[in-house]
Image (tube, rainbow over all chains, first blue to last red; front, side, top):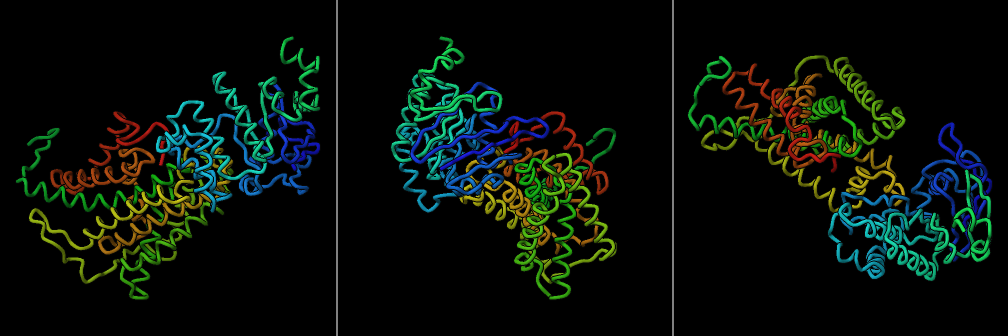
Length: 233
Length: 302
């Protein structure tokens, strides 16, 4: 479904990605793990068309989408829930959700809104509240709900558990499984290694702009090197 | 009455109220010019120095439509408002946006340069001669008791309120309006839901220009047009925007009325030339005492 081939990217003179190759198949949960500054968000923003890669290919259903503008990427069904959520703080919850279908699935806005509100009843309770006044957890729900409004084929989640309470993190990972069971392919970018590996089919580990380790999630979970470097065991 | 050594004349309340009422009519135009300016500021976070030049261009549009085709200046709105939108859209999309490479300080200079080009272009093609649109109804109106309101004044007030209301509805009820508000505060988030930010910037600039074109129509029956006419209004509109709060619609409306009333009362008490400085005094006082304006938020929003 999504395949990156030898992707190089950066900002001006600063190179961040030095030839990253990975793929996400239909219906998969694929985790991308790595510490701060490994280049995970840069990777996402190159897929989403915010930045243009300097070299390499981004294939979606076999077509190279590298360098397409963000709205064209959304139109294809690749929707990102970014780090820091990036909800519209001056708009209310309903307006935020409705704008989720600005580019894609606009004709099914009403039905999708109902669906999002059954997944997140809390957003229904706060439907007229200004989004900037929601709690961190609610804002994360809103960001995911907004992405769901576009009926994504591939959902990119950038650090969805960041800043959430342990209980909320648990709920978040359950939700990711649920969305995946509904047929959504998920590219999960996380620092939360154990919980990500528990729900993922496969995973990649990235360090300093390169993939250093990859394989089935269960194998990585048992990998002694990963345990040492990320879990301190 | 004495004021800093100046002896101010004393008037009856009818005269003062009459002055204030004509200030409301004048303020309506200021509010409309300020509305376009504050919309563009709220979304693009730039001060559009070409706003006055675009107002002047709109007034020439209205003038020539009247002169050459006999079109009533109010009816001309049907032409200059869509024309203003198209011009503003194209300017932002293909000139200002392209030339500025996303850097706000360059955008500022580009709009300043644009205003110089438009003004000198107008001087070259239209000369510095003042030209007036003559309408048969410019001295008719309604007797309000304290003052006599002519139809162009009433039209300016009604037009300003209607346009501000329509803009508010557009911003709240349509997807494009919501996208504009979204882009104003969260550009990255907007890109990630598939909003084309360049397009939204251009739509915003187009709307700002369309509004100032509407103001041009409302002004034409009472103000003669010449290449520098825009500066007069835009300087005051800047004051209105600062007073009302950068990026606030309500602020533009209330600020416009306050400035209009102040200016008229200043004229009444201190005479034509000295009266106008009251507006500048307000400008400085607001900056000193309440830099965010009456309705401003710390990070200006739509």
